[in-house]
Image (cartoon, rainbow, N blue to C red):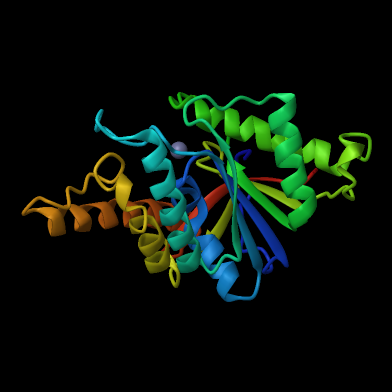
Length: 248
Ligand SMILES: [Zn+2]
C-alpha cells in the first residue's frame, strides 16, 4: 500500500469462497475467523489442503501415514467449526510441494468446480518465509487461478472456466484489506485447537503437562495479539489482514 492509501475493510459476504492452504491448519491461522464470519452469513465456504501434513510432528517414531490420516480427521473437525461445506485434498507429500503443471491442473480443477467469488491463499511474496510449501502453495494457487479463468488451459477437464472476483493473500507483508472478526475470533481458536496433533509442534501446548492450561491460554493470547494488531490499524478490536488482488 502506498503512503496515504486507505485500506479496504469488510467485503460484502461472498456467495462462494475457496481457501487454500499448504497444510492442515494453515487456512485457520491465515483466515479462519474471516471464513467463520462468512460461513455464518451464508457463504458457501470450501477448503483445499494441498499436502498430507505427514511431516507435522517432532516425534521421529510417528508413522507418517497414520499422521496424515489423523490430520484429515482434524481438518474435517476444523471445517465444522468454521461452517465450511467441504474440505478438498490433493494429498501431495508434506514438504515436497511444487508449482508444476500437474499440480496446477489439479488446483485449477478445484477452482473450476467450486467457482469461488473470493479465493484465499498464502502470500508467496512474504519475505524471509522459511517453509518451502508455503511459498510453493502461494505461487501454485495464483498460477492455477490464471489457468482456471482461461479456456485454453486444460480444456480436457471439460469444466467451464472460472474467474474469482477477488483474491486475498494471507500472512501478507503488505496488508491492504482487513476483515473485522471480533465476533468469530473464538471460532478461529476452536478450529485451530481441533488440530490436536499440532498442539505441541505448532501451538506450544503439551497436553500431558501440568501447565497445559496456561500453555493453551498463551496460544490464545498470541492469536489475540495478532488480530488486535490488525484491528488497531482500522480502529477495531479484532481483524484479519490480507493483500488483495482485484485484477484476476
Ligand atoms: Zn503450513
